[in-house]
Image 1 (tube, rainbow, N blue to C red):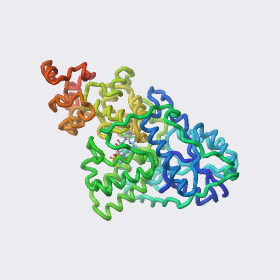
Image 2: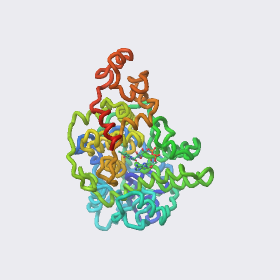
Image 3: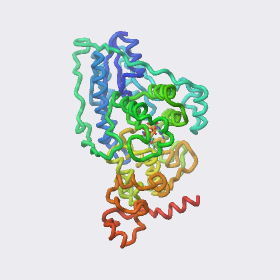
Image 4: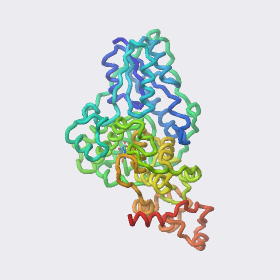
Length: 481
Ligand SMILES: Cc1cc2nc3c(=O)[nH]c(=O)nc-3n(C[C@H](O)[C@H](O)[C@H](O)COP(=O)(O)OP(=O)(O)OC[C@H]3O[C@@H](n4cnc5c(N)ncnc54)[C@H](O)[C@@H]3O)c2cc1C
């Protein structure tokens, strides 16, 4: 074919990008487009915004980096802000495109957008969807995603026994783009500002685990640092439940979510590390976690919008509370439960929270407070720099007891905090107002007597909130469950 249009979505990379590679193989010239879609920002039905400032900044950086990388290959990235179903057919007509190549995602709104674009294209333009964001390709699975079991472990075992990960594709050397009149004299277009995306500048906080810069090159630098320079993979499983610092887990998630890194490319890096340095349970465990990621992607393909129901994919009958003030306190990190508040303040300041933290704060909202878990998922959607529909809503549903596991996932947040943050270093990192308190009081400030409060200068209800939950009671109940 003469001209193909490549519509980048959450695949902001040139290495192992099957959409780009195939378009280049099949067409003489490719027109490369990224669209900032207003429907991916603005309010959700649950209250929070779809797009918060941390991810907006990361996305702008990732798109800018992609443009840079394409320009180095003699290409150009055309950037637009608007409805893809209006913009893409117009561009396709202008350059007389024969096909549109695009990454397909399993989530409901993303699929609706795809369908709308396809329907609006001139009839002769082919619409070529490619699944490009998981480790395993759905066509290689022993059971199609629509029919897979809802439980992770048997699925994982079968996949590991029967399927191979496809080799990652190399980045193209050049990206021949139509020029001048062949490009319909299209303007490349400026990237929008944060303001135009409806968000403020994100806070910068030197307490953050990482600065998280968007883009493929920055993602690869993180992989280099974590795997090769700092040699952390050999202890990943042992450290992954940490809370402080860059090294306890990979922090690859924002780059995977935006598609700056391909999981297949990452898999090959892990295999190379195993061949050149060490292969152990810890090195395997990173792949194990990528399988969790895959599992949720395929689960979304199977269950679609059921994931957004209050009763989740299992239709669990439960009356969820809708208490706006309690939700506000949870979101702001003002529950009066230090381990929860420290995690929420980290999220708000940086856009990131550890996996251990996410499980605990989700448990407090959905289980302890009984508040509609979807509000929490929507709040994470707004705040997370690594937000991904399937990973977020899938994990939230799981934690709320309405997802891919029928077991109760009640967390005893008090004992979790005391175990994983034994010296309360994480708590005081994010709640400096508690710094200097004895460790026990950092975890249970409500146990401070009036004299303790006077001595320490931490006055409950003034310096730090009174707890909004009877934590000790709930913790004791959970211990006896
Ligand atoms: C309530 C809740 C919401 C979450 N929301 C998201 C989200 O929106 N986006 C997201 O990428 N992850 C989400 N996770 C999963 C997990 O917490 C993050 O992927 C992880 O903390 C990111 O840090 P990391 O890259 O250092 O992870 P690592 O421990 O280094 O793991 C490596 C990679 O494996 C994948 N991974 C690890 N754990 C999970 C998991 N449980 N589910 C799916 N993938 C996983 C991620 O891509 C991660 O980058 C959520 C978990 C919970 C409990």
